[in-house]
Image (cartoon, rainbow, N blue to C red):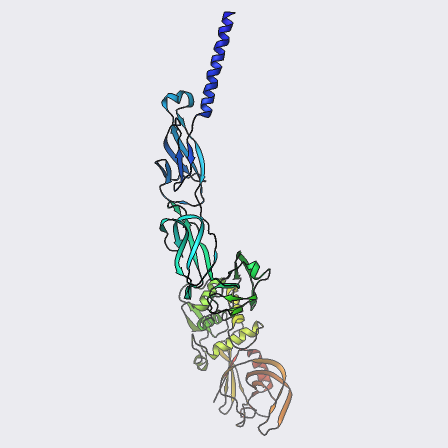
Length: 529
């Protein structure tokens, strides 16, 4: 009986001791993190919690972040990003007398996030004469403006002047702002801040500045002083001329347009028509506008000639000095404004001297104009001999695809000296010599070189005779107009080789039939004595 009592007592004592040990282990004071202040974390160690002997900081992907513990503050040795989640593991050595009960060491782990500062406003309205100041939701210690190296502030502050007064040329503007809340943080990604003069109507800051020259692939942005939804509603600006591309809402106040493909045509004046008038920031007065304009530079004449030669529209070849321009829209658009170096060479050994004298690389000339007209006709464009925006887009498109014309090159030379004749040259040799008639002294055939601008197999020719009477000749065959009403065509005469026409170059039917297929629109015709 007595043994049983002693056993029960011993069991009770053991249970009490174990319970006390478990309770001590559970409720023993432990190291905690307190308010960090300007540190990454501040370590709080209650009495009997032990001594922190080591600290290890890791990033979200497990990389070690060098850090130190000094005066109870955990601080990175280098810089870390703002808003980054980090894991802090402490090594705590407990008092020796308690080691048997709660363990010699403890390894508490905490997750912290480095502080982030956010702008309170990105679209500011500033009174004239006031400092332009950016404000944040918390004090910041490091600031970078307009891409300049970060600078440390004398003391943390939540409002930072950018160093400009809203007046004169700085009445409106924009600046990229990057900040860090702590000195040991890397500045955040730059954020664009725009400011406008304080006015009661919507204002617009357009980039690039309207009225300036822009590249054909340039994106432009429209930043409004009020949200886009308030200024424009659900409508979007309209482009003229229209072209592939899309508007995107960059943020609540900003629209951007990026053209696709070859972009704005070379030489185009781009118009952006807004659904409602706004004040263009930077302009004096309260004048509202609804149309913005930009100018795209024209393509270089030298590059025009290089491409026409490359595609088989000139009697010349072009050889680049270095690597050829890559077959991409971007590379071709760059080359159109900054032609690569190279040399031209005549494609045919026996090119007529009269034709060679007309050629001037890098300068407008009749050979280039004729080639432009030939290209325009083949592509269904307006035949005016001018390299406009639509022409350049078609030309670059063919260059990218390598669509070379293979029909060869023709040239017509007309002698007014008796006996008058026509010579047809094609791909290096004269393939036809025929007597012909030019204009009588009262209506002479114009001297010079002209491209064919109209090419019809059968037509009716009307006009006025030198004596004032009128003529009307239907059924004229194989007509190639090259200057005003002057044309090469077939005509029924008893003889050829003397001035008999009213300015045209008349040929026998058989000769005209052979010449006509070789004189499409753009073919050059030279008339000399």
